[in-house]
Image (cartoon, rainbow over all chains, first blue to last red):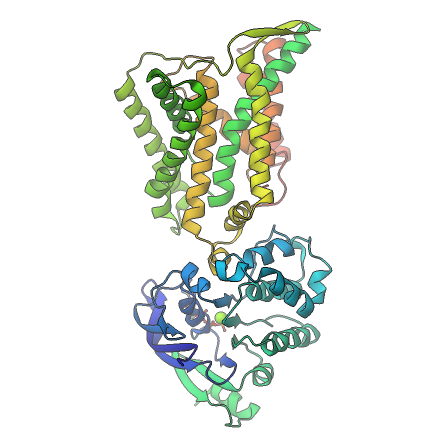
Length: 237
Length: 291
Ligand SMILES: Nc1ncnc2c1ncn2[C@@H]1O[C@H](COP(=O)(O)OP(=O)(O)OP(=O)(O)O)[C@@H](O)[C@H]1O
Ligand SMILES: [Mg+2]
């Protein structure tokens, strides 16, 4: 069987600025994948290319063997590659319930909508208490929860989370990490970007360092690596 | 007693027309964030389409829905032609002002070429008149007063109670997130324009049934729709609806109390003083809310 995600020599950017310079990686064959690296080196751009929001100028992205490089975001979501973006504002004037309903927009997802809603409510009990509340009025942590729950509603075959704990207090961070573990335990493979290396190590056994728009280092499952070694990679050379 | 009845009836009637025009403009503003300056031309086109169909022998009961459907297509085309290609540009709002003004003037001149300047008139929705209390009213106007809230209610139910309406409200708020849940943003933008143009076309058919039609007939209704939308709050569709009726009544009252000549000045005085106190509009909630 093909790997959930295979990326070959990906080149992408914004207008004349190239951010990804021929990035390659294979992910998802052995559990969750973690991405880390310095700010502004292309992690978010990589995820946006995967979900079709950024058009790669060269290279290839395969999702379970199928070439999705030039598919529309709509088509990619329809295949179950679900991207929960960084700092998601979601839909400020919609309620939590409405956001989740939209999360299950695709045909695949609609078929299992009720099931997924129950699952989301079990993982995020805090949300179930405020089903009708507009997203605009939620706290940052709660909004992040809705964002992940909306992703879950899409019946992901691969769930891509961009900095799910960014800017949260340590207590909330832990609560969110717990929820992400529950999502993973429910059998959804993850690709997760986070600045918090401890958290990343707790969630993923397969890590990639994204550096200057390429993969700077790969830590395979089984290879043990300490916090210090990772910090050295960050601040580098 | 009679002046009061005249004012109430006149206010309801004008308010209905303004609401029908304003809500379409607001729908496009809230979903796409642009003002469609071809909205008046679309209204005129709806009236002329219906006229063409009735002149070809179709009864109004068939010509009206057919013209409204055709207007949906026209709105879709307008969006695809002069709005969609500009989306994502930093100067979107101003660029769309120009392209829709251009498209509107093209439509007006096209209709002038095709139909000539001679005034035409549509058959009324309902023939005849009746007396209500102290005043006599035309059944056409009464039908408009009764039909408008039904259409607006249907639109509101569509936006708030259906999945597609939910998607339309969402795409207004966050285009990236809309794409990431799998919404077809281009299609939803097209749908917003199609609905908006259909509503404009309906307003045109309403107006063409009691007043002579001309290719320039959309100018004043466009202006009124802009006033209604700005006055009611540009970020919702319920605000402009309330504002439309309020302005309708204000106009009817001012016409009676101060005369026709003073009414525009009074209207603008009220509009400007309201905007000084509430720059976001009289009934504005927060930004970007569709229903
Ligand atoms: N819409 C955009 N237009 C132009 N340049 C952009 C855009 N978005 C990102 N960039 C640039 O692309 C580069 C990579 O950004 P990206 O968001 O992918 O980094 P990142 O690794 O996710 O950073 P962070 O850890 O801060 O989230 C940065 O230099 C950024 O300024
Ligand atoms: Mg990022």
